[in-house]
Image (cartoon, rainbow, N blue to C red; front, top):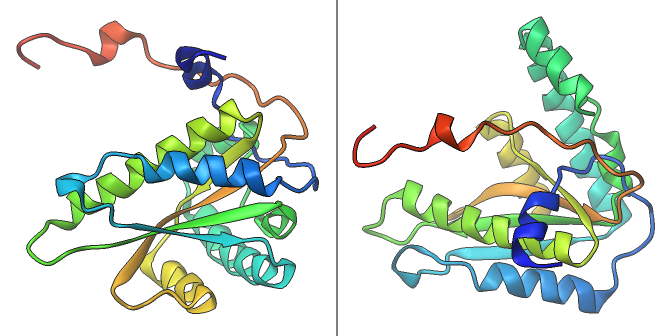
Length: 194
């Protein structure tokens, strides 16, 4: 698969086989994250690999609790749209996903957090694309609020000076996810001026 095929094929997978991800494949995927660009070459990330069933179960319980509350506040059309794409407030399935990766980052003094957060997301994108190239499915989980992140940090014993950008769900896809729509280039690109 060439690079542009990988980019076009990447999907948010929400149904995974319980088949383990071989260590050598996981290492290659993580190494792609390591090579991401970062502001000032800070390389601010730390990847926590979570495969323990008990830890994944605790994370799934917290994510379900916060997701349920958030979905209750969504406008009906938002909930319908997400549900049609396979989304749900029920995150209990996270407990059975072969690998969760907590992408953490710390902000060096004198640097703006958005630069460092952006750097962490560059690593996330590299990981997602590498996973696709390896035949894996992936999906990001972002926190609904700071309290949810705080509770996940406690479980994972993340130091106080680190944040979690996202949890990446990783494994072999049970089914081919539907192709999402994308805006046409003419809708999102302009030259010289907005």
